[in-house]
Length: 235
Image (cartoon, rainbow, N blue to C red; front, side, top):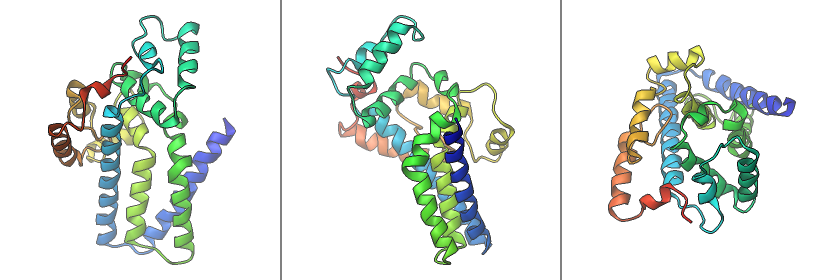
């Protein structure tokens, strides 16, 4: 749709302005700041994944009926049941439910179009923050390494779910393969560890933050803060 392309274009142009602000004062510190921003984006992807995986869905809303639906998910019956059920829960709970359905049907994420993956993230957070960055660049308030950190964080945060989807696609654009070779994006075999255990490696960008998040998981799980029952909707 045209408006979706406009939103994506506006975001990329806005980030481009911020990138120019970062490049206006090139330095080794700016490179380090960009890597720190990329790490921060990976950390956010992992923390979000951890919370949404284990956050319990509201009971009594019928989410278990669509989660464990045994028929065709392309059928009119299932689609109608899903629309009716989703209308009874909040946006936050829809997102949490979506994370849980990813585990039994991981490849479905790879079939989603770009805007469905990142549109809400851009509108709700990335674009407004990037526009504030534009104001800082144009007024000279921020340039150089702070903007390098911000650009990396914005791109890594906004495209986190897209990067996640590339781990469940058979074919990907050339830049995804290039970034994997550089270690800036993780490989599918590394992400498979998460799907095999559901207890570790929650980050889905580059995976740099997984050692920290894995320790956090162990700490919270040992204190009963992460109930495995939250991984699936309950009746």
